[in-house]
Image 1 (cartoon, rainbow, N blue to C red):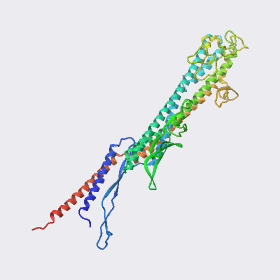
Image 2 (image 1 turned 90 degrees about the vertical axis):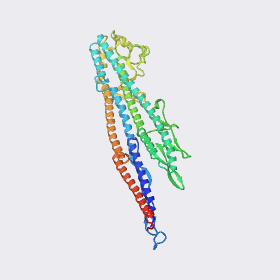
Image 3 (image 1 turned 60 degrees about the horizontal axis):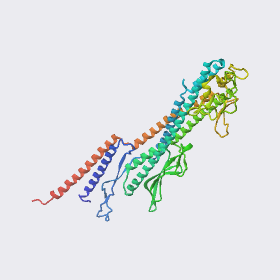
Image 4 (image 1 turned 180 degrees about the vertical axis):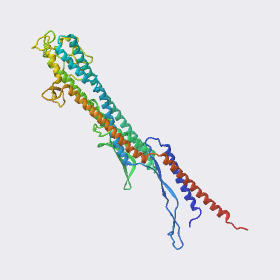
Length: 518
């Protein structure tokens, strides 16, 4: 059988294992509130047993005695499958949050329904023309027409400017997100180097792995990606060397070169009309499926759509009113359409495309948008030039003003005049919608889209919270559980120490108490 000294090493191993458990528990408690920290656990295993030979079983085939315990590793308690789920759903949450945020801003721009929105101003505008058809000779009524038209045009201008500002803010946000992507990629590369070196030395860099996973979690909210674990061939076996690659689409944000070193491949934003797009260094476009960048791109498209609709409405309204206005007579009975040259015919167009700032020479309807629509400055300065009368009725009648007022109930269709695939204006037809309904239709769509975005944010938030709770139940630090572990390791340490004390007493008895007595 083994000697008395045999148990000392077993007790020592027990003390060392308990000590490592206490240190790990202390580390968990200290990082209970550290973002991205993963709970760690000491993995204990029995050490190889010691064979004790017997006289009738020579060669060490007798019974075996345990030699104690060994702490094999300190592992992180983490579920990689759950990490993948959380990152995917976090990306969806980030996308919908951006869409909701932008559409909320657009809703504020249109502010419908309200007493100050475009819908109310258009109603007042049509009512002013109706009143002018009944009091064509009244200067105050003519002034009311000009002022309500001016208020409507300014509302178009202001709404378009705000939408353009939102688009500019989105472009800037995408640029900032791209900068963040590149920064996160460089940090992952730095951690890859450190982790690879530590693993090569035979150690376990748990805290560095936590830091890298936290960076990947942050990246997942910005853009979707796949994580690939880099392996090297050692003696014919593929072994994970601690580095990760990050693949976006068919290319790598973080890759490994031929020397087995990590490399960050930067992403850039487009220029000009492509500011919302992102590209690799070789010019290949990146098309994300989830994340904040995807949300910003989708939201930008929505805002551009609403701006285009606003332009079509402003242009269609102006062109149809101008077409009737050009056929009428002013208060003195003179036709306003006296010249075919729009650069010299100063009164024929009621609505014109104003420059910034407006100039007296802005008399053409060419290129009217919601951003530049305005009342002809010549007519604003001389309201008698409003063509309220028609040719058949002579000066002073309001027949032409009535035709303009009746446009409120006419049906109009979206038309691609240039055949370039883009809707340009609204043209009167046998079917379609009124000007008022055209505006209400796309503002109603805005309300539905914004509500849907809010619903998706709520649903995704609940889903992410549930997944995070599951993750915390595995990887999070429970102070109550750690206190139990601490007491458990403390008692194990004390018991191992007591074992050594007992063995010491046994040896003392053998050495000092078993001598020859007189």
